[in-house]
Every structure is written in C-alpha cells, then in structure tokens.
Length: 70
Image (cartoon, rainbow, N blue to C red; front, side):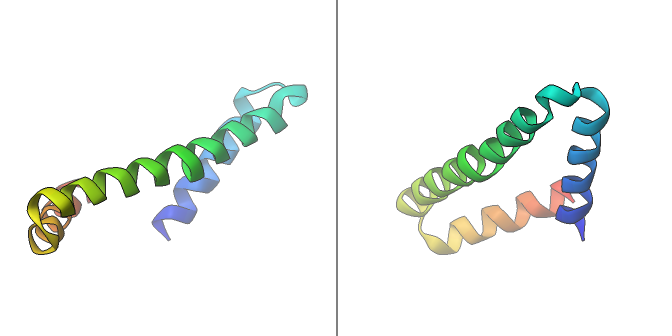
C-alpha cells in the first residue's frame, strides 16, 4: 500500500508539473532512478554491510532503520 501510494503520487506530480511533451522523458527518468539507481545502491550497500558486519547485525540495522523511518 505504501509503495503504491508513493508511486501514484510521483506519477501525479509529473503529470501536473511537467509539460506534455516531456512527460514520457520524466517518467523514464523516474523509472531509471527507482529501478536502476535505487536497487543498485541497495544491493551494493547491503552487500557491504553483510561483508563488514555479518548477516545478523545487518538484519538488526535494517530493522532499526525501518523502525525510525516508518
């Protein structure tokens, strides 16, 4: 539910803020940032945490981070 609401808000913002002729490019940039940069950084930083601290500590770090973010 949360991801869907944020994604819908991003798409609605693009619809209202970007001129019609540039909306496709803006949607492409949004997709690229989310699926490319976001997932890539998550995999790299998550892998570094597991390598440095182990999977148990990494899981705890993720849990504490999620608690404070939500």
